[in-house]
Length: 73
Length: 250
Image (tube, rainbow over all chains, first blue to last red; front, side, top):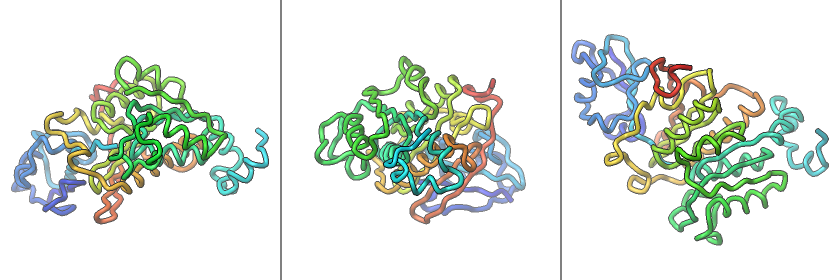
């Protein structure tokens, strides 16, 4: 399974954390599409703590963290 | 350093803490911290650093106090509406603690001034409200070998991370590119609950105090995310990116 963690406003309607079968997605972008998250709404896409991109491959055991832009001060 | 009787009393609650003590207090009094942005985040940062006795506090902001600020920007008041924020803040900080030298920089940060602004300071607290400024501060601190603490808020959410040269990723390692300005959310449209920058700003002040005194562990290599709706504080490990355009060649 791939663990998907949503943060800040991306939690709305999706919860905090979920899992996706590695058989059902091959890239981080597949995960975004599955949860109907436009790419421009993701400011950080981390795979196991590393900066990554939607085209990056994901595999069983990965942790994918998704943050929206948070820029207020 | 010999503390005056007033100083012994003023700082008594932190002089008794082993991690601070007289040596830590002396470090604070001799330290210089630059706070970029004196709004929702900068307010608690400036108040707590001045209260703790940070000897020099620099304030950077070009805005004037507006009525819409007062819901969260607790440095300012109805009496200082229309006054330059750095002056409004300086008055409050000097009244709070006369030990503190407050230096006002009534400008917005840009490419032409950022290196010169941060140079004299020991630590920078990034409390800006624009993505452009956040990247500008990160890149200048990386370039200048300056430690800084990033903070950001929106609605019920906040985040914070600390960069120390050579000790972990910078802001750009994780947040590679600014979001599209046309689509980036801003607090004016999305809103923010005043206590959220209060929480994040207090954490930024704590990071500054720990950096200056050497107490504890900093949020280097970590992004702390705060969700006020569920009261979750979550720490996400971040890795330095060898291909980071800002710090990748360190």
